[in-house]
Every structure is written in structure tokens, then in C-alpha cells.
Image 1 (cartoon, rainbow, N blue to C red):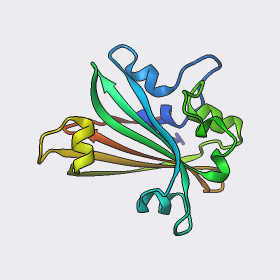
Image 2: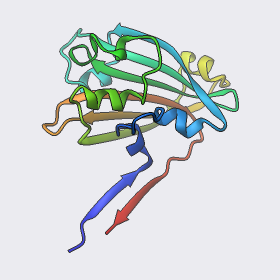
Image 3: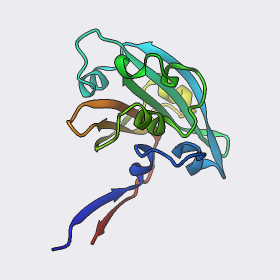
Image 4: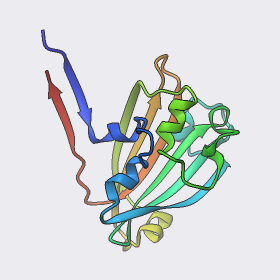
Amino acid sequence: MAENRRRSDSLAYVTPRDQGQGDAWTAEVQQRGGQQLAEVAEVAPPREVAAALSLEAGAKAAVRRRIILIDGQPIELADSYYPLEVARGTALLEKKKIKGGAPTLLAELGYAARHASEDLEFREADDLERTALALPEGSSVLTLLRTTTTEDGSPFEVQFMVMKAPRRLHYEIEVD
């Protein structure tokens, strides 16, 4: 009996890269864009991120905030959150690019992605999002909350992305 497997473009963002390869975002937008690392800090994450990371009330997390550009224009705000016990003492809390990207570093630290879930929401942009993405008042955005867990279900990375709308997401289903 053939095994059904789901494959999506998101797989590249949770999979370690080969030796010498850049991170997945850089590879995707290399021809037309790039990314700017805006902030690396210990913060109180938004409620939905704290819940996804299974953090106690008031607990902090490490965040890496990036602005994704295409043709020099901001198209996405991408924040990656990590429990402090995962991030402290690592490049996750350094304000510089991580060679091979965070998934490669996380795998080296023993955090191999075994499951990722994604929640999408289409909503009106807030003031900060409108400013950062150069959107007119009343504009909508697409948000994606991706939670990545280990084999035992422990969450170790939550990404929260805010994308200009309209935006098309592509998923594939591979049937063997």
C-alpha cells in the first residue's frame, strides 16, 4: 500500500540546510529581494506565541525579527520565537545571520523538527504593520503562525509572519 505524504513549501523553513548553504529565506528571495534582521531580544511574546511554546504566564522568549523584501519593498514581517532554555548561549540570541539558518543550528543543538503546524488568518492590518509594510489604512494582511515540535511534541520554535495581502500560498501533496 502506498504511503501518503504531505509536502509543502514550508518544509524548507524547518529543515536543516547542507553544509555551506545559506538559510531558506535568503535562497528563496536571492534573485529579487532579501531580508533585514531588525531585532534580536528576550521579550514577552504575544499570547498566541506563548501558548504555542507552552510558556507560563509572564515568561519571556527569544525573538528574531526580520523584514522580508522583494524588489526593495517590504512584503512580510517574520518573527521567530524560541524558549530561552533553547536560545540562551547560542547564535539565536546574537544580532547576526546564522550560518545555514536557524533550522540548521537547532538541529545541531538536538532540536530536530518532527512536526510543524500552521494556522492562517486573514485580518485588517494594525498601525505598526501598516507602517512597516507601507500599507494604506484599511489594508488587510495574512498571518501565519507556525509551531515546530520535536519527536515528543515539545515546541521549540514558533514563527509568526505578517504578509501583505493578497498573497498566494502553495502546498503540494505527494502520493507514492
